[in-house]
Structure formats: C-alpha cells, structure tokens
Length: 598
Ligand code: AMP
Image (cartoon, rainbow, N blue to C red; front, side, top):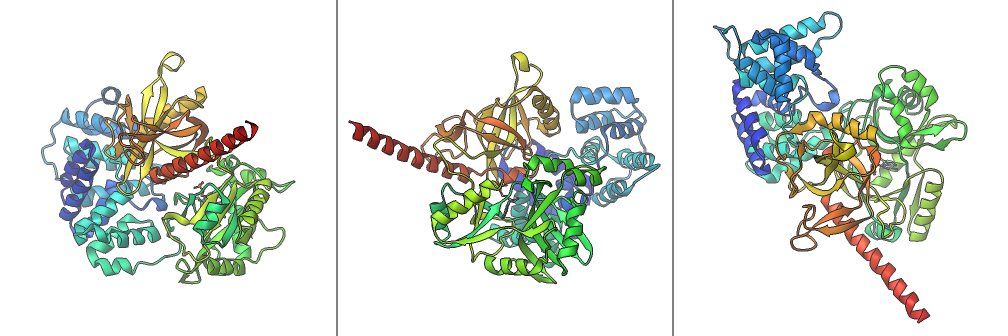
C-alpha cells in the first residue's frame, strides 16, 4: 500500500472541523487498506506502532529528528531549526525543508506503508550505545525517499506529535461501517475492545476473520481489560433506590487503581489508563505472590499510608512512585496498602459475567493474607437501609476514605462501561457543588496584565459519548499558581492545533485550540443555564446550555484519566437536576421557618 494514500487521508483529517467527516474519512481509508495491513494502519492513525499498554515509544527527541531532516534535506542544521521556529510545527518544518531539498534525489523508491511501519518498528527497538546514530540513519533512509508531505507525517509520528485526535470510539464506529456496513455491530466490536484494549487486534480480527471471530475474543493474561466505571448520586436514599433496596457498600479509597495480572510468579500491573506500571510497585508484586497462589486478574486500589499510624494519606503521595530510578527508596519512604475489590479471571476462567456477590466471594477465597501483609480485600458491608449506608459512609470517611462505592449485587463486571451498577457516594451534596468535576482542556485565552505571555484562562469541556464530542462548560482562570500557569503552557504546547478540533463543539472562539487530551479537576459554586456554553444545549432550556459558575482549578491534573473519561454531559445534567432539587428543598424549609416565625 502506498504510504501517500494514508498521508492524503491524514491531511484531510487534520483539516476537517466536522466530526462526521472524520468518521467518513476513516471508513474510506479502512476500506482501501489491504486487510492484512489493517492493524498497522489503525496503529499509525493513532500515532503508535502497537497497543498503548505495550508501552512501545518511538520517543525521538526534536533535536534528533531535526538532525535527520538536515541531513536528508541538505540544509544546514541552523536553517532547519529556523524553519521549525518559524512554522512552530515539526511536521510543517519537515515539509518545507524537504521541498527545498538541495540535491535532487534521482532514484527515489516510492514509500509503502509496510516499509514505513517496519522501519519505525526498528527505530523503536534500538536501545543503548550507538543507537542514536542508527536511529538517524533509519529516519534519513525514509526521508530520502519521502515526498515533502510524506516527510511531514514521518516526523510527526516519530516525535509523537501526530495529532489527528481520533478517539477509540470513532475508530470502532468506522470499523463497524467499513466491515459490516452497519453501525449496529459496533457493540460487538466494542466488547472485544473492552476485553483486549487493543484496537489493532479488533480491526485485524474483523477484517480477516469476521464478526464471529470478534465475538469469540476472550480475556487473556497480561492484556489489560478496560476498567468498569461508576456513576454518582447525591444521597444514600437515591443510591439504595437505584440498587433495588439492597446492595454492597465498599470503602472508596483515594489512591491509584491497579489491575494486576498474575501467572505463577510473573506479575504485571496496569494503571487505570492501562499503562504498564509494574515497575512502580515491587512491594505490591511481592505481596500478591505471597498471598494469592493461583493465576488471576484482580483489581484494587493502592493507597499511601503512614506506616506508624496506618492512616491513609492523600493520593498525591503516590506520585513519588512515578519514577524510573530510586523506586526502592520511594517504597520505603512512601509505603502503601493494597485493597483488592474485584476479580476478573481465575485459573483460565473469565469471571466478569458472574454477579458481584459471586466475584466477591471468590476474591475473599483467593486472598490468604496475614496481619502484616499490605494486601487485603476492601472492607464491605451489605446494606438494605439508607441509615446503615450513611453510618458506614461516615465510618469510611473517618478512616480517611473518600466515601463509599455502592455496588449492585447482581451486576457483572462491565468492562469499559460507566453505569449505575457501581455508584460513587461521597458526602452530602449541598446547593453549593460539593463534588469536583474532571474536565478537558480544549482551548485557551491569552493572559493580560500579570499573565501576559501565559494563558489567562482555559476553555474546559465535558464529554458526550453518544456523539463522541466535547462540549464546553466553562472558562477557568482561578486557582492557578504562577508555576502552574507556566507548567500548563509547556504541558499544552504539544497538543496545540490550528483550529477548533473536529470533536469539540464550542460557541466561544478561543485564542488557541488544543487536541482534547488533558483533564483537570475543577470545583465550582453551582451549575447554571448559559447561552454561551454548549454542554447540554437545549436539554434543559431552549437556546441554553449548562455552565459552571465560579469554577476554580483544584490543583489536580487528572493524568490518570483520558479525555473520554472526563465528567460527561449526562453527569452534568443530573448534577444540575440534583442541585435544583436541593435548592428547592432548602427554599421550602426556609419558607417553613419564616412561616412559623410569622
Ligand atoms: P472516580 O475516579 O472519582 O471516578 O472514582 C472511581 C475510582 O475509585 C475507581 O477507578 C477506583 O480507582 C477508585 N476506587 C476506590 N475504592 C474503590 C472500590 N471499593 N471499588 C471500585 N473502585 C474504587
């Protein structure tokens, strides 16, 4: 397959501001791709070579990429660097440099997708001494045969700057349309994706072996499963009602979610975002090997603790574990407790379709923990009245938890899905929003006064899964320290794009637009109707959306969440409804008070 074919589509994808066009472009590309190449094209479209969990990074530094560009274009390094500064984009710099190529290469071989992919694979595998030069040689080898536009995407991919911003769900839609002619089958593809976290694998299976083969895909050890997620409600009564009057209440700990795969003494740990974080938790691995004797996939929350008092510490303490070196030291200084809350696979058998009670019983049977072990099963109580649920919640909060996770006793483990089978219950919701929201940065406004040269405010959006679109919900400019503003500037820089992203719906015209990637936590005084923001537009009132009033950054960047994990439009609608209910109740009781005084 000619590499130029996918380059044409990438160009069109970058240019479009329409979400539907994005899907159409991908469908056409998938249809014109030879079937045995389909997984590679899917990975390239995502700017990767393999599924994310394998952690294979091209990770070429800008300097090295520019050096290869200089060699291949015949321009000197200074000139190439100037082009980069002028265009502000490494891909555009490559396109310009290659179109000014001094020596014309007479015998160019046409680039194919196969060759580009296998060369990139070789680059990713090179390690250690001498690898730098070899990498540059490989890059030049591609660039020498590349048309300027082709070179643009090679440089974008190797520096991890391909920003087509296609979501996994867009690709699933496109796969269903391309290979089954119907979006209806997306659910089947989505199930397979949720169990494997590998879009390339799903694409390859549907393209080569058809829908039945996709249906037959199962959980495998060391391939992460997309996590089940929770909805939230405002009161114990509501939680109980949704659960049909009887449910499990588990402590909700504030740490890091771990998905642990164990085969004999071989253990791997994946984060909530499915990155391989095995190296962060040698202590958890040892403890798991000691207290679970069979092959399993289990999930739990790791929490930092004060070893002297056994108290839980805020999740930030776990950040010390995110390092390459000195992990032994971090382990000693920042010990953890690991509370397991689910089991998805035991000794070759999937457990996800079993009801919660069954899985919980199996989990309790699996863990042979001693009193000095850091591993235990999360505390749980079966409740059937709101008062006991609340009492248990206060107990949990007193012990340093965030609140409770309420779980449906009959529910299977719904991989990759957010729903009411799991419900977060934090503290009582008041008319002031007590809970935080996790929102995606989609744009920014230039700062004035003290903030000149930095962003003055960020444009934040919520996510709507149905149409795979981000809808704006507020501009936030408070809660940032000067250092944080600096940090945001450099953190957002790689995601800057030339126009509003095709998956972003906004009435406001930001000064700068970003690919929706970074999620931050904000708190606000309330949710109000607003004609300026597109979140829940027309859902409550014609011509109005919902917006946050007095939003404030809490200081927490949710790098454990992907943009699609952000607070959803539906959640914001129900938070708004809940707030109305509480406000009315407060009003009614004040009126009563006033009445009785009068
Ligand atoms: P949130 O991140 O606010 O959406 O809350 C969901 C997260 O709570 C999960 O992803 C887990 O990391 C965490 N969590 C803490 N305790 C539990 C529990 N008992 N069951 C499930 N998740 C839990």
